[in-house]
Length: 324
Image (tube, rainbow, N blue to C red; front, side, top):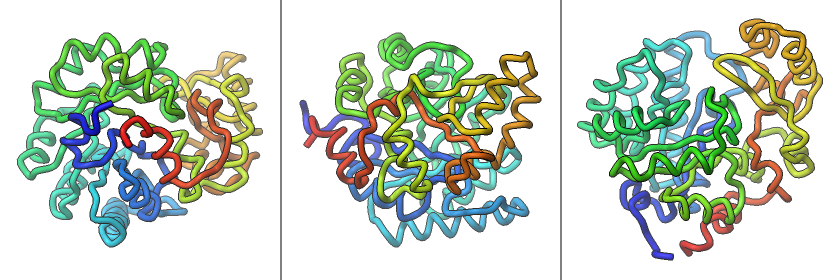
């Protein structure tokens, strides 16, 4: 295996691995640990927080504080998504903050109906590297990403945790028809939690991996300890899956997820299920606070491969062993 590749060259990292930004479950310490271990750490919505913000100004102030804390803990690259709020009017000021704070990498979580092209141009002109990640990877949005100057395209399959794609296509199927159609490098997201998954992704033409669930099972992650232990004892066969907006969610079984699965079976609408899931707080309650009655625990199918809680460094060294 060659010791570097285009992902590493673009991002300035030792390894071609990105830690997915996971709502409520990142903070400066965790992100810096990922970057110091050779990957690319990412702050996420509600990074370092335990309560919802009261205003858009507070969203920006909290983010600025976390960015500056990351910089105090590492001199390595890290990233921030430009979509951190349900208020799409916040995309512009968040982008301006990333530029002002000289954040090295921005993530565009692309969706139809918003014109990201001017934002990408502004960020590129300021020297940021651009990751482009649509909910549903297609040849059309991959070509669009290349056209507007994205540096890396992230192809996400149905095996991921968090907000699932509307297309029920497995991760290793979804990447293979993208890599031959664009010239920019492609990373694979969804279900990768051991070195075999990394090797499979590379064999299919991806040049790096974008990993979420496996990073939850680390000492530095702020997820509740009782939930971390559930990751070790849970397999993909155990997971609940239910309809919600925009498509589906998975959860390690909790009292709330059991209720949501029952609502789904009874024909409740996606809006009704989303409301019952306490969307916006259900993840905080379940994953950050460890409340297994009132919250849910979103993970991907790669949870089957998690056997222990270890340091971020140990996880990255394992996943990236072919690059060491």
